[in-house]
Length: 115
Image (cartoon, rainbow, N blue to C red; front, side, top):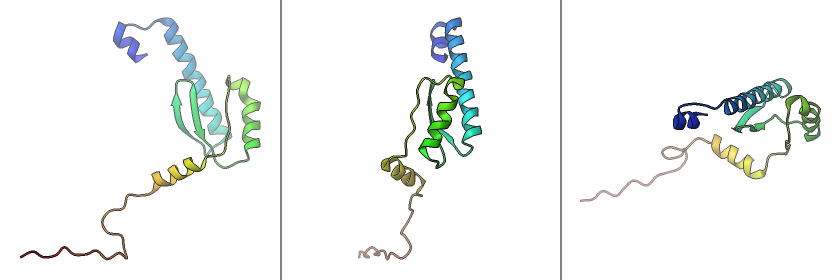
């Protein structure tokens, strides 16, 4: 909407209505995840597409809950999967603090004095 407003100085009612409906649907999905999967977090969102990280549960349970509420949430399609090995590695790498200085227990050579 911002781009359209900047280019034309106005927003068509159809674009505004579409945006409003997408935001209402996104709010409903956020509320659903907060209620059904309290420890979940929204990882990524682009328009009406969202990606959540939910706490460890059986995939069949997660699938069952989503399937039960699919029509209520007006969800056209969804996917449920275990995290990949790559995503687990990336998560640990992201959490790891950057090392600064010389690690404890490692001896560093002193630079040679020049005369």
